[in-house]
Picture 1 (cartoon, rainbow, N blue to C red):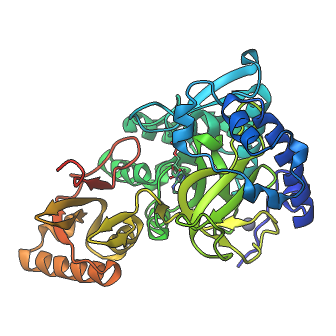
Picture 2: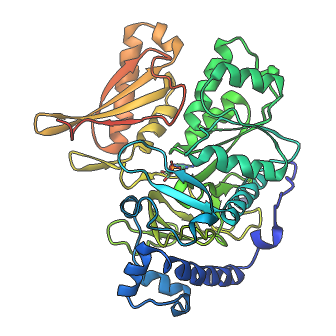
Length: 439
Ligand code: AMP
Ligand code: ZN
């Protein structure tokens, strides 16, 4: 195998010793506590704990005594309850995706945005993006950070950025061909859709110069990544972020693609048992809780992401010292409890994608059937399978049911759908329809 050159954006910080990273974190934490004390929300919380200044924090262990911040706190503090700087210093406001209820908003100063762009640039660079690349950013521009957040990082590297935003697949394909786009940023579900549309609109793979995609924004399995890599013949990199933490690029895969480096000079990450909120053993799965060190306008201390992951304890061959986190298993709040059994949608996806004859799109439906819960997995089958005779389809259904029930210990109903009938053209894929509350 030819050796890969390892690209560093700022090598010194990316390969800093754990001791140096801990010093940076302690300084950053003190500064953030100082900042937090300026906000109406934290000043009340912290003063009740007797915390009066950043210097009251003596070591990183002191973080463990601080209270958590949750999404609901941000909603309660809407719009400016978490503001730590004068209003005239703000230059941009973003909000989390999703449309129900009071939005979760985040505000930034000029410096905050510059740092966020630098973090993003570091991430894209680590995955091998360069100034020679042409990037088509297919994430939605607007309040959602996947558009602008990624955009400024890519420009910082010197990539040619085409801000096509999401949707309008005909134009996406035309631009990809005409501008010889080499990198795209999109949700995994949109990448699959794009692949199908390429064929439908009569393009050949050789019409495009595509070599890499960055995906994020929704949970997806390793199998799905492999599938996209194979069908599009590209490298696919996983990128984790959320608006509350400045958007994409909080953690990102390097060229080895074995977990995402979480940038520990800019974030303090804890992985905790979501029931006890105590740290899990290193390498065990738990909820990611993050303290942001790189934002002046809006501090967040011990923010509960609700996302489930684990640290990968082994060092990465790239030489970066920032710990890696594994692909997300789901969220604590999308974990389904079906007749008392915990089920992660990601587990179901893994089985579906491994099975020959099953298409890319699916929906998990949970509803009441008398006193019990009923789980139905609706999934597309591939075109050749659909054309085949019903005995083969029935056999496939039985196999799928057996595989799923072996894994999740529940016997699901399976409903097959026509190829292409469940396709999405934009936005995040809805994978679960939990109808139980409404009945
Ligand atoms: P938003 O605030 O709209 O950017 O949504 C953030 C949420 O998207 C996170 O809390 C995760 O649940 C999800 N998410 C983002 N990136 C990934 C990823 N790479 N893998 C799995 N889920 C992700
Ligand atoms: Zn690495």
